[in-house]
Length: 338
Image (cartoon, rainbow, N blue to C red; front, side, top):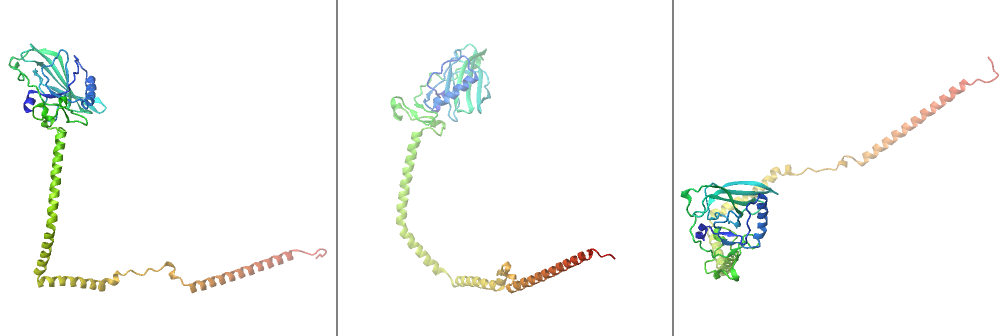
């Protein structure tokens, strides 16, 4: 497919988009949004864009896979392509690439062809490109550039159509319901251009084969492990026996010394710091009071209260007697004159 790629073969929308001498950016945006839906329903065909009509305003919709160059169109341009991006609303960005002063070598007398490419870099699928050819300002053709840009006749591509978007992305559509061998050539598709989502059927079959191979290896390794288990247990018992025989008297003495040292350390720690570690006894708040003392204090207070009551009553009686005596002295009997 590399030879076809060099010739400019590309994935084209199969239906005719009609002609339009001039299209606005709003029209290009509408067509690209519509193209995203149509591309999920219609497979693209491998074909060429060759010497399109500029006077009529011919349009093409192509899909460019990742890492695949833009296709040739049979036109040589005497200008550098200008690229700019404009906001298209709803968080979309429309990229416009324009190149002027194109001509068909050996056919045109002046360079008047203009090509514009539109694609959505945000808010759409950037690999869908709308191409429009129109007539623009003309200049003279440089004689040294008046050479064909590709070799003719063009080789007819035999690759089947491919879905480029949607749930069937990468699925090929063979004519008359044929299979990969019905085309009389190797099974080629978008996968040859670095698209990771292409050739789903081949990928699924390869994954199935890998899964079957892994399952067989797991079963084979499981049976080998079952047979090797008794021998492993015997080897383990022998290794334990050998290790017990290799332990020296010095190692045993060192192990016992460490164990006894730990025991003695625990004992002396408790003897030295055990009292400090004991928690003090927490007495309830009312434990400072005794019942007998409370009863005696209550009786003493009651006696004092009673004494105070008697003293208060005596003072009251004395005041009453003094008041009566003062009143009687102020009264004089009638008929007595001094």
